[in-house]
Length: 453
Image (cartoon, rainbow, N blue to C red; front, side):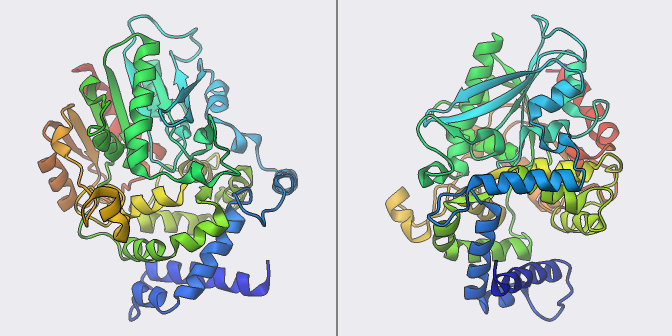
């Protein structure tokens, strides 16, 4: 990488950092970005080459280079092998029965589903076990639910309580990088998907497979953050499974509001304008959570790293909370590696569009909306179709769902049965699945509630 590229990347990171933390009190983030669009575009495309070394491109490095570099980092810096474990390997390491299943979506994406069929050290599922599908964000891995130790993890707690637990993944993530026809490293068409496609195809396919394989008609659903809006969006799909849900446990649900963060507003505006340029360099892949990136995140955010306070501060600024209960066993690094698994440019932009709009809409093609939808604006999703009972677990300190957003969500969903406010100062969005304090504050309320349905 040349000196100019390094300078530009540092400029972009420092600008984002200082603006997010309010260090430029008299200069808006929007002004900084708008006055430096060519610089920002070059920085993002350069970052795309670094973050996605295997992306479809005529100038890509051999995949073997990244693999060798990863092995070197792991050896020299004593990175524990667990950093590179799959969800399946993590479950087995904790002594739980584990199965890997592969679900094919109607448009050919092959999605890994991790099953914990029974309690720790058991042989598997009892015939009467209730089934739970647990989903996380469109950029995260199913390992989100097992980053914590068994006594603090909702997935393990449910398995120990006798539930048949299924941890789902969606297209574009580490465990959703397969297709019946398309190669994610060579074919840009693999990455031509938005959140609409995840909700329309992946969610119904997962639910259909699980109910059929487990031999049940109805299931529980647990969603973290953006997984909840994917569920709500899936209610509009032709093959919706919303009527098969006994109870939807919505942990830190995420919907857009008019009071979204300045950073998110600027990201949406800039990325909308330069996405076409960026895709020439990263092949449509927004982020690839491969072993090399896992190594970098571990090096930066592990307990022994001097940069760990910065990792905490950044996540706290973007998502709220102080992230207590992350101490020991490099938990923050494992959490961030799980949270950042992979997605497409289009899906990342769609997430940003949703986060900056008070109305949940399909992907905004801007000038292309008329051709795509026959209207100037993308169609809005009808939340009144979400007939399943919904339990909301939210924190007042969640920066992605302020109180006004929560009230709007409750107003639009027809069957909210419980709204549980987490009465803990500085409890943020990530804390609901990664912090050890979540067991007492959240999970001890979730399990008794599920028994009522």
